[in-house]
Image (cartoon, rainbow, N blue to C red; front, side, top):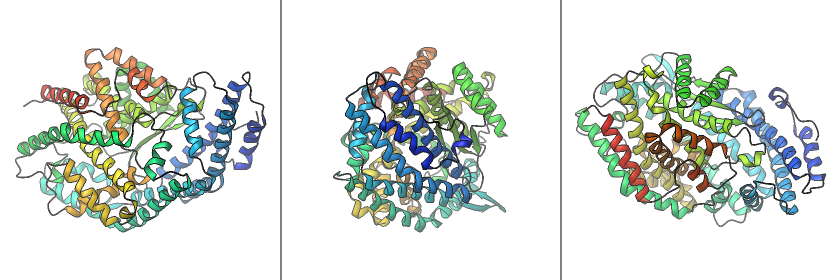
Length: 566
């Protein structure tokens, strides 16, 4: 096969005319039972190069949202390469499907290819590229957000430690400053929203789908559950989890000694203890996290150490850095890159453990040589990350290499378990909102209607916190949920995966080594088996029902009671 770049530095200089001969060679080659495996490997090499180029250009724009060169390079990729690469991918899929050949282990991959090929429309390529550009604009808005706090300019993320302050008045001032800064960009986000929505409607129409929900379901390769299953999951959460979350909020209110729980009361320690302060420097965060990973499993710890050595981490928050956190694979080198915004709070530890789980997925599948077998549904990819948070939790104590004294470690574990319960209702808000949006696209074009719909859902699933006088901030929270804007319908995965992760953790409570072995085995399967089979391999079950959810909630509440000092 024609030579392709072997190093990322060279890859970044390539343009489509340099990739195109490889495409033409693959399309021209006879496809037989004897050469199909090699043909697939050659296709995988090409796909890995293109995917890594996209990943590295995206990373460059998130680590510095003010870097105009990086932004223009990414936009040029979408203008000059993205559409042509997707056209080539479609042609190669059609060639393989038309051959009737099925390489060993490709049953699920071929199912996915058929679905993707069926959805493909050339006229959608420039629209999909435009969608990616809108995503970059969304990131840029949030990356530029700063406030002045006590005489110092800081990013809104750097205000997070103040939300843990025991001084309630100080927390409120910080929260209101944060909220006001978010609301200052309200119209800019609304303007983008009015571009996102019709663009997605047009994409779905071009693909011959009845609505964007149907289009997105197929695009996300959701074969093992339906939109109706999601509604069932929302209802189960309302019945089983909302009461448990309300118990957590009420316990917090009583311990804080306040009449009502306000948004600035959510994160502070309810017993008046100082905020957990896990690390002073990023080096300390990295070194202690490494120790924890080694405790969970020496091989996993070794993976993380490789990332440290090879500068595959960007952890600290700073101005002009995109919000959030992610782990993205670099397919050509079969290694991951972790991005986050650490500011010195305990949540940073959890985020790094979470993204570490994603990165381990990349390492565990490194032995799979076909990139087509690496397409893993996020419903299970998030089991890798959420499961790691729970598997790592017993090692937070300093005498086990972690960050805290025993009482602090117990407190951190309680916070994680409580956050798991509180998260499910919030996930239901975000997912139900997205179902409403794409079932009512004309109505949703009006941001005021979105505010009303979101507020109704928030009140349904999130009782326990008093938002009186703050309704504007509450109903516009949908604007700040990146997934709603950049990756529509990608949020229920977290709720499903969290239920899977709790089942993995349940197994670890009786046999940690066996549970970790099953977890790693499931990760190593990549996308070679179905989603329910991946869950079973990890020792869990893909579920939407109140019974399974109720068992998970009961286990979490029992562990909280065991760890709670009062």
